[in-house]
Image 1: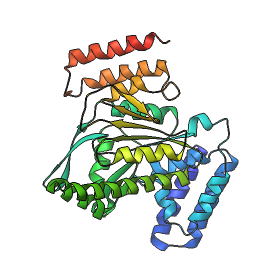
Image 2 (image 1 turned 180 degrees about the vertical axis):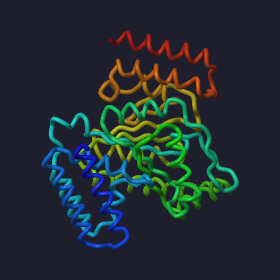
Image 3 (image 1 turned 135 degrees about the horizontal axis):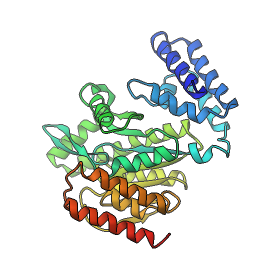
Image 4 (image 1 turned 120 degrees about the horizontal axis):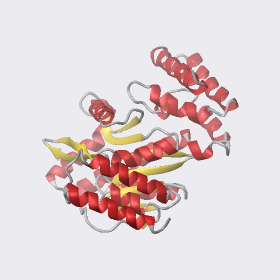
Length: 324
């Protein structure tokens, strides 16, 4: 067993014991194991593995937030640098919205109704998680309070869509309830207030993640609904190395545009082609477009037929090849 797997298993078992007993001893043991991991340069790997170990897809930060020694752990993380030898592998974290970013969603009967996974989303996110040895964290506006009806369903759908390792951070019941009611009633002022609160809660989840991964850059995936554009701007303003992708849902046409490290796109295929070289190198873009073309046979596309789409992908590959 790899050392990071062993440490992660120990932390998961200790946390399960702590959740039942609230023993300060178990909390201190978790802190000690995290510190031990730094001596083998495996701390970042352990952080990722802990999230993978949770049956309910809880992120490591949610575990630490429950511990009475959390401030000491966060301070230790801040003081510990990622060795330059492993920084390229563990120096990036991926966070993503779910509704209309990962899955097509709509509101019906005072509930979110999910559709198919958005074409291209999975290959693109998996490119980053594969190349930067990280697990994606999905930030949902939906509350943990109604987990059986919402969050659990989301987790199962993500798993069924091919995401084996990931974590989910949930939102607030009051905020999402107000948003749904204001959306249905079409009271603009109420919806704006609810969206502003939703954006702040998502950004606070990002700040929690940043405390857990203080030396990482963050790549955020969102859309132009539920205030993700506001979240994206706050995230990129927080760190000059952060970057965000915003999928157009309200107006799904137009060329991809990068504004202050936020890339607005009409499809993930366009997002790949328009990504900066530092995020997705040209050769990787061609590989990703090929993966997306293969995946496309599983979906129906709203704007272009399968044959036209295949031609589109090949055209994008030809355009990219000019810059090799």
